[in-house]
Amino acid sequence: MVRGIDYGGMMHRAMQRLIADVLRAVAEEGLPGEHHFFITFDTRDPDVEIADWLRERYPDEMTIVIQHWFDNLEVTPVGFNITLNFGNSPEPLYIPFDAVRTFVDPSVEFGLRFESQPDDDEDEDEEEILDEAEDDDGGDDAPKGGAEVVSLDKWRK
Image (cartoon, rainbow, N blue to C red):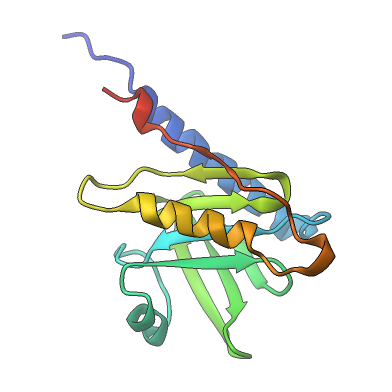
């Protein structure tokens, strides 16, 4: 029996490795220049580890920003740990790469979007994160324009 080549799955794993490589470099050297990231993830994923109050506030998905203050960034082959500040309260998070829905670096207009299950409505969420990236009130150094989004589904059969 001849199997087809799973290009979609291969691209999905390659994009996850790209995110892992970027985060690994940031963990070792810090964020270069104006780079910063908006990462949206599925809080329903059983391997996501976040505080109960965050899960209650974001029962479906959550977008984090890695920019000015973050700590304890550690990247594994399957996910990453990071501590972020929520209202002057540092909170540790663990996010598996399988839970990541979007990864955007608005400083260079780069973005990845991972297609979700057919019953999820990701189109509105994609527009929301891109709007957030465009509307960032970071002052004069705020990035201009939206992000390039790569969708795998247009190549899947």
